[in-house]
Length: 387
Image (cartoon, rainbow, N blue to C red):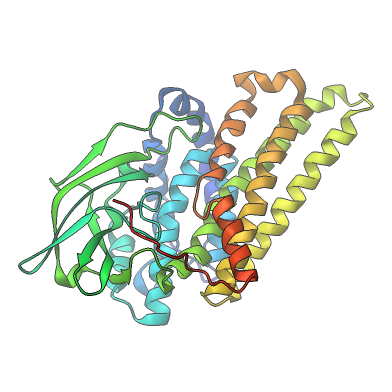
């Protein structure tokens, strides 16, 4: 049955209810998509029809007007049905959330983008996996703008995406390596989607590599310029909004694993060792939930900057560790049944492993927090862009 676009009510749309309505169909497709390394295309078509793609765009720009906290709750609920769909959606949502902050706080040149997302159901794809502080790719100055090339990795949602939010490095003879930020239409002839996504978990996110060759970026289309390899306000904003959204998915996975494990374990409720295992699992979930609540609160009330980045990144490490351990404990709680694909726990176990790999990864976070505690500053010495 086709789902119709949601019109917000006076009280606002209940986005958790929307994804719970869509969820059973998503869950029914999840195993096959995972087994085939197949992008969740039908799910994204449903998300578009339901208005979810534009949920984070302010109402005054034509969107759903959902708060950041509401988006986190939606992704957490969605992850219980299909983690790959939720993670892919989180990448779009964090790019939208960053644009909304720039529109509200800076008057940045993003209003047109936000209106287009609402009017055209545009899906944004990010290349954060290859475009952290150093940036990647090459930008050469040409008449009227820039000619850019590069290979971008972890482009989740590329098969359904419309715009790649990315950047390239210009070797400025005076200022040194300078990262330019811009959008690239994914259907442009200069962009090739490479079939590279063969991975342990999150197999249905379509996180393919992208090759860009000679795309022209007009001067006016560069939205941000920043020194390569150095912290910039844009990245403090990204950390503050993106990490709570992304890690909502991993909390949702851990909670789903817990529910499956408890259902399976009830058959062995008389096992005297079982309550200890369940208690350990519950403790890890409590840790994950507390860390997540800290991240969401910081996004709601914090100011982007070094202190907020440090606290959000630390909570990301705590949540990631706890979510992985909670799913491991869920496997123990369920016993041998967890090893069978039919119960879905082994897929959740594989999917939650991806929590290790999003910036700021654990060792980088620990080093950053340690440097700050020692008064050494957040920027690493001699940071250089990737080749």
